[in-house]
Image (cartoon, rainbow over all chains, first blue to last red; front, side, top):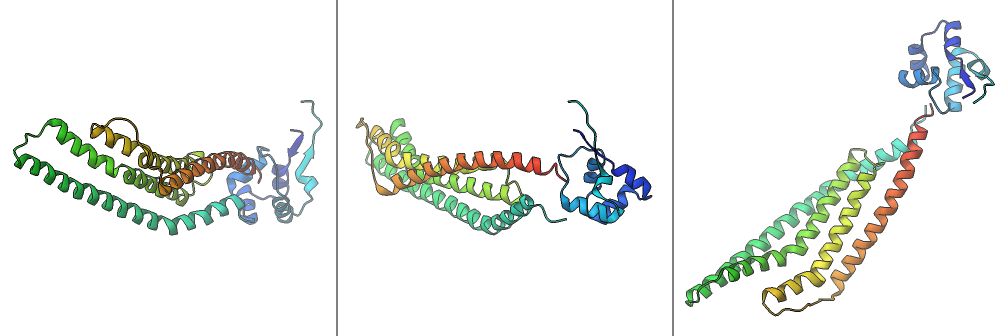
Amino acid sequence: MAIVVRLDVMLALRKKRAKDLAAEIGLTEANLSLLRTGKVKGVRFETLDAICKALSCQPGALLEFVDVED
Amino acid sequence: MSPDPLSSAAARVADEAKRLRPWVYGLFVLSVVLVATEIATDGIAGTRHLRELHDTGDKLSFAQVMGAFLRQVLRAAPAIALTSALWYAQNYLARLEKGELWTTSTAALVDEVGRAMVTASALMVAIVPTVSLWLDGRGAFQFDLEATPVVLGGLGLALIVVSRGLRAALDAAGTLKSDHDQFV
């Protein structure tokens, strides 16, 4: 997959713990951990919206496209 | 986050099953009591018949005693098959109550209900009349083509077809659910 999740970077920049973010946006810690490690098939706009609101950032700051050969 | 539509569908079905199951279970218990009563009553009548034969001085053979016993079992067999259908139906509702809506083994219980209905129908139409003839030593085959068992068999077959369709739909739903669960 060429989409890399940069949620860890944003969490570090905002000095927020993943546990606190999960509680704030109403996602389970397990699901947030899967998202952080990129082990999900997709992200709902609803989740993206909540994360962007909580971390005051743009979706582009959370997701990055890396052109890699399969 | 909005509630997961698949989980809320399972919860709705579980509520419905919770309401229905006591009724189906009650019907099952009632059927067991009725079948047991029928067997006991027939048994008492059969024993009386055998005692009368014995009192007239006729020596009872093993075949006569076994014949009387088999007739009682045969008479009750369709009712036993239908009672098992009620048991499978209440098992099905119990699975739904536990939230096991998306499993093919749950759908297989619908198939069992259909099979029990077809078995009851086959017993009423062919097996009981034919075996009764054999027990009487009159040989050959007999088919009692009455509307009730034929309709019952038809409904059973329809239920088997429905359960196969349901199983295929649940397979697809299971795949969709596992895909859906990988979206956060």
